[in-house]
Image (cartoon, rainbow, N blue to C red; front, side, top):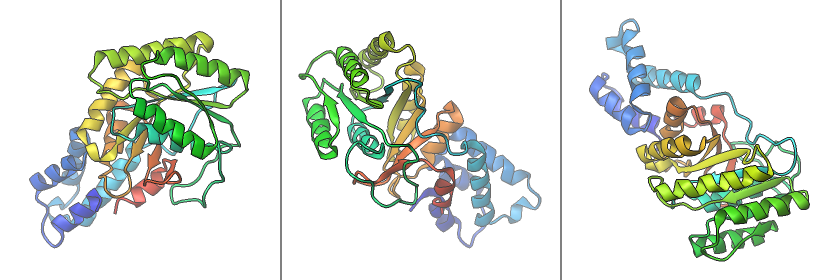
Length: 298
């Protein structure tokens, strides 16, 4: 049950209690600023005391539609090759799996796409993909990405556990450029966002890539778990301040997550959601669609 369905059930057949409504919207991860605007909008309408839950849902939809940009381009291609995508996030958000799903989404990286899902399929032309297993602090992450890569039939650059992630990404870029790959996806370490050494390591990776291409990485995607609420917003703040994020990959947006965090991060930080993960399978991954997101709210 998503957050608008929860609200509809909570206030069905009874007058709106503003304190309860405010608490419910904040609990849905929409954030305090947006919740305040929705409450104010409702209270400024004529005969607001007679409002029902239908009016509340309409106001929430309108505010979400105002905040979320029209469907952003899923990936901005570089002028040359390869387009480098740095994928960051804390452990447990599904970062490495999302890296593999993104590789699968890019046509030509292995296998044929499944029939289109509700969120839509890839609009990109056929592309070749190389992955860099730069989460060298976890041997399990290297093995996990290696397994995914074999399933995809894609290429991977990997090193030994404890190897220098920046040097590995540098090597991967050289290999991808020499072999004329279209995309290089760099899966990075996922320790807590509050750890200074993690951010320093990510800065080092960016500098290493910048020596080969001044514009690399061309995209920096943060993977967040839709079920973690305010923690996801805190992660977005820290990573954005440190790295300058260009987009989000939101996982578990399959009904188990409230989904409001998509709006809260866009509202506060202006970071668009580029992709959503809606299940466990490789195919449960698609570009973010504003219309689909709003329609699925209730």
